[in-house]
Every structure is written in structure tokens, then in C-alpha cells.
Amino acid sequence: MQSPIKILYVGNIQGFFGHQKFYLIPQRLVNGFTRCGHMVYVLNDRDFARYANPFRSRAFGARKVDGKLLAVCRDYRPDLLVLSNCEMVSNEVLQALRESLPDVRIAYRNVDSLNMGGNRKKVERRLGVVDTLFLTSSVSGLRDPSGRTKLAFMPNPVDPSLDRGRAFEAANPHYDLFFAGQAIRDQTDRRPALLRRLQSELGDLKLGFFGSAVGKPSLFGQGYLDALAQSAMGLSLDREDENPLYASDRMSHYLGNGLLTFVKRGKGFERFFTEQEVAWFDGADDVIETVRRLSADREQRQRIAKAGRRRAHELFDCARIAAWMVELSLDRPFSQSYPWIEAETAG
Image 1 (cartoon, rainbow, N blue to C red):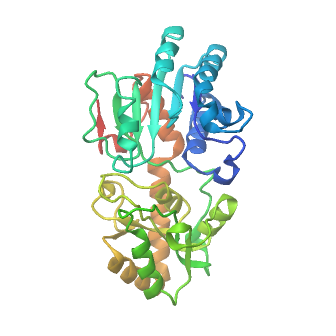
Image 2: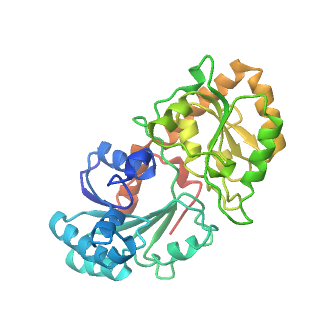
Image 3: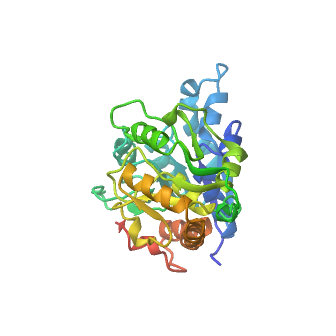
């Protein structure tokens, strides 16, 4: 057991509107930190900004976020500050925080690909300012000239209290293939075209496709997790396919809840999973062929899905990831092995 510390987690978690997405990464990390024995306090910066002005405008309240963060830190005195995106938090207030709490460590967490939109600029803005920077994609190509910031690939966490589904046990799944995602309105998002082809060529099967990527309503809350538990297979399909080790957290949702999960070949996940645990694919042809074959071979599908779930929970349990984040951020000796470190960690 690690020596307990106090953690302040700042980001879009819980708050007034977080109930529909209670299963996303912020809650998983908070759960993981807590299971490691640490005290965690949550500050929702977006909600504070929105309700810090009479117009309920996040933009109008943004300038007050820095002051709120300093006030919370003054009273709470965290050992580790974890920033989850937090674009309204300035680098200047982080420097001021170090002056009042010289021993505090600051971590920054980002879950989008560096190749998406302006995300690289958001990440680079924190280099040399925070102590650790965690990305759910490769940190290759990022460097901190000051040498202050440690850069690390962080897997999407699996949480046993949230990922309770055992979809492979469903005798008659409600969906043969599941996908949920939002379309990005630009020319780089190739998912809608691929999904339309799957709808056309697998139309005789039960397809659980949700979200604007397929022109259908989105699915959130417990209804989303219930749908996963009743789906035979899940398609981990991301808008951005070029950045190594990047995957949306839908991949961990599918694996963690026991779906046979389709994972893009060649992105680096081969070092974690085998063909006995996931279904690799390059494009629509692979997906169509495998869905057809495994829909007709329930025993093999269930065996692969069960093995994938077991492997994901073993490798990427949220408490294991949380323990590593604390140890790396506080320069503590590693208390256990962390398989993803060999995948990519830079300093």
C-alpha cells in the first residue's frame, strides 16, 4: 500500500451535468486513486466558471477559475494536483501555486490524439510547467527542452465497479455488433463512410449503432452500459488512426464489459493483446468477414471475448494506473510492474 496523499482532481467530472457520463475516464481515475488509499477532492472547473456569473456563461466565468483553484489549494493543501484538460487554468496560476505550496506536484492528463484539431498546442502549452504529462497516445515527437516535465503514455483505464458487464455470457445478445460515437464535421473523419458500408453489408444482423457518426441518437448513462452487456461484438473505431497507441476509451469500455472487441491493427496494441483476445482489423473487409464468421461460431467468439476481458482487467485496472501516476509524479519507487511503461515512456 502506498503512503496516502491528498489529491486535487480538476476537470469536467461529476458536477451539475456529469451524471450521463459517469463512466468516463475522470471517474475511473478518481476511483483508482481512492482504492490506492489516497484522499481525493474534485473541482469541476467548467461548472464553477458557468455558475460564477449571472449569465451562466463559461466564457464569462473563466477568468475566476484561477482564483478558485488557489483558494481550494490554500485550504486543502494537496500533495498532487491533477489537471484534466482544464484550458481555463493558466500557467501563471500554477507557478503561483508552487510558490505557496513548494512541495506540490502537478500532473496534466489529456485523452485526445495529438493529431486532432488544436490538441497538440494544448499539450505543448503545459510542457515545462507541469511535472508529469499523461497522454492516451504516443508521446513520440513531444519534448520538453527544460527537462522538467516527464512525458508518459497512459492506457485507458478499466474499472471493475463500472465495467461489470460479461457480454460473452449473453445467450441471445441484443446486438451482434455495437458502435457508439460522434461524427466530426470535416474531411478527415472517415468513420461515417465505413459505418455506412457495414450497415449495408451486415444489414441482416442486429447492429447497435448510435451517435451522430451514423445519424442516430446518442446513448449515455446506464443505458449505454446496459447495451454493452447485451452486445456480442464492439467496434473500436477512432477518427484518428495515425498516432500510435491512440484509442478512444470506447475500446476499454468494450473490452472491460466482455465484448469481442475489434482493434485497429498496427497501432501498437499488439504488445498487449493477441488474436486470442481481440479481433484485429485493417478496414471494413476485415470487420465484415470476422463478424460473419464469429456470428456463426458463438463458442469461439465467447472464448475470445472472455479472454480479452480478463486481459484488459488484469493490465489496465484503474487502481494500477492510478498507483503508477502517483509514483511517477512523486518520484516514488514503482511498487509493481507496469506493462505499458515498456510501450513508451519519455523524460
